[in-house]
Image (cartoon, rainbow, N blue to C red; front, side):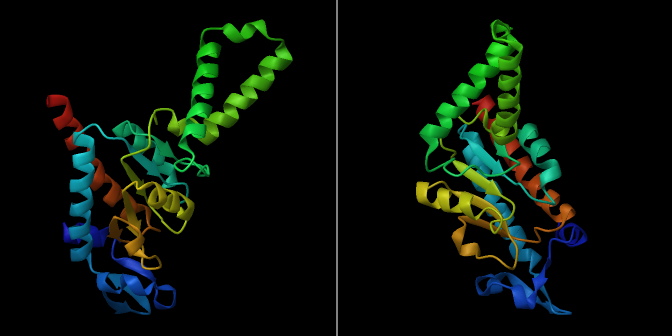
Amino acid sequence: MLQKMIDAGVHLGHRKSKGHPKMKPYLFGIRQNVQIINVEKTLAKMQEAAAFLKEVAGRNGTILFVSTKMPAKPFTKEFAQRLSIPYVSERWLGGTLTNFPVISKRLEYFLSQEAQKAKGELEKYTKKEQLMIDRELEDLEKKMGGLKTLKQLPNALIMVDIEEHSTALREAIRMGVPTVAITDTNTDPTLVNFPIPANDKSGKSVRFILDYLAAAIEEGKSEFIKS
């Protein structure tokens, strides 16, 4: 496992000058001015995060996945759809957690309009009105398409890069939503409930970790179905 992590580049952090002091406990050392993450500690944190997510999935809890930037963005939707969980792959909508009632009403409207279109009920409008509705639906799909199944505040929030998703992290902390996140050497891991110290700029590294977490979630979902 440790060699596979190294092969995936999990251990490669940022340059020393960009390092966050609170990441020091997870470092193995410095090589050519680049911080090297101790993959043994990464594995331990992956196991902790996986156990937590398995427990959440095992009680049919809601897990929200957030990743809007490279390198994870290309497979964000794939990861979420594999697990049948809500996700954000575009811009995080401010208030998604802290103002959930408003977001929920907007989602209800979105789903209602989609249902009406599917039934052909929008044909009663003029062509111009239908065009405006179609454009609105396209905009809503881009902004909220991944949140269609979010019926309540999530029981866990997974993030790939907490620097990029600082607003989502702040909202989760404020609302008491437990967080799981890949924390590179330039971030503060103490802000996250289940930090996973690892390279968040490499697609191979991110996919390796997400696949590990996905297996735990799938196992938890399987246990819920059997119970």
